[in-house]
Image (cartoon, rainbow, N blue to C red; front, side, top):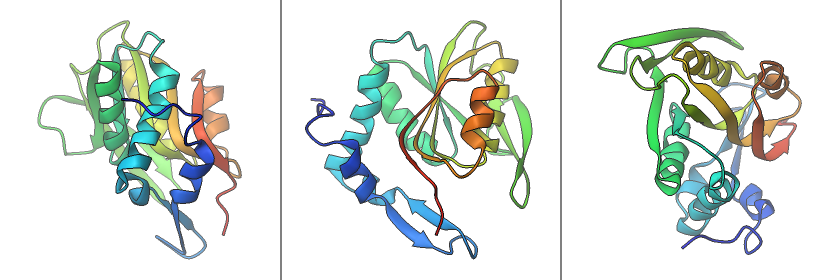
Length: 186
């Protein structure tokens, strides 16, 4: 049974996210969603909020970005009765892959997808826990497009409004939905 979003709202979800100052480095306020995942009521609320948004849309597959996008994306794919595709860090997938490198605040990273994970014309919902600089999500978008898929929408629990990641995603022609927005600052 789904929680109706009006029963427990997004504000309750925001209050449940733990904030950890100076992690993983000085000056960063880390938003820890494990407190949401540990609670059956809040985890269900999180998945149900996304389910209500997407249940009437044509979505062929959900793609989740490592690692918290796996948790949310897999549960959402189950609710939407569609398949789930992981987009993983380089070297973690066992079959033939496509890779995409992107910039981080302090270096570069690479994500990969199986070459047979998305088919031409698939409408893909791309999921992650948060949008900061947008690099990871944009790398996922590029991989999906290279396989012939269309990113129907990208979604996240949290969007940091003081960074330009959300703007970059939207400028790349990808609709972005986030349940929560804040400036992410300490």
